Structures are given as C-alpha cells and as structure tokens.
Image (cartoon, rainbow, N blue to C red):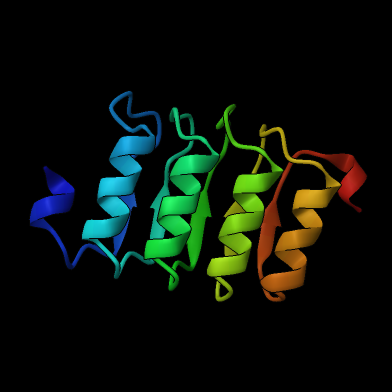
Length: 121
C-alpha cells in the first residue's frame, strides 16, 4: 500500500517488518524508482527481491541487509552491478563471502561496507 501511493518515496526503514518479502520489495521497487535509502534488515528478502530492487532503483545510495539470512553473494552482486552509486551497504550477519564483497568493491568503488567477516581484510 505504501509503495503504490508514495511513488516519490526516497527513504524507508522497514527493518524487522514481517510483511517485507520478495513480493513486497518487487512492488516497492517498481513503484518507487526514486528510492535512495532502504533498511530491510531482518526481513525475509532473498536474491530475487534484491534483483528486482537493483533493476528498478539504480540510484540507491544506502542499503542495509543486516541479518537477512536468505541473501547470498548473487543478490549482493546484482545490487552492486545495477546500483553503481551505492555508498553504504550493511551485510552484517549475512551469508556473504569474499566473492560478494569483491563484487561490491569492483562496481561500487566508494561504497563503505559494514560486515562481520574478519576474512574481508
């Protein structure tokens, strides 16, 4: 409902919201292409939702995926590829490996990545 009526939405904090799923993110992304910052930490979003978000919101600057258990390297790589102006990405407590980290650094050179993996340095 928010997405369909707020097409000018630029910032949204939906951390921990049980209603946020891949379908909800797809609707949000398609309805709100001006989105710049999104916190969907602890939500049931997977790589499919991230792909829809990345393809529809290429101007995304900040994204928090903290504790999103369904997100993998593939989803993070997709965000990095389509959202090259990304400035901040939180992947703390996610299943992201060095491969995903490197993809973000490759495509989003100025992005600050918040993580909990000591192997990234």
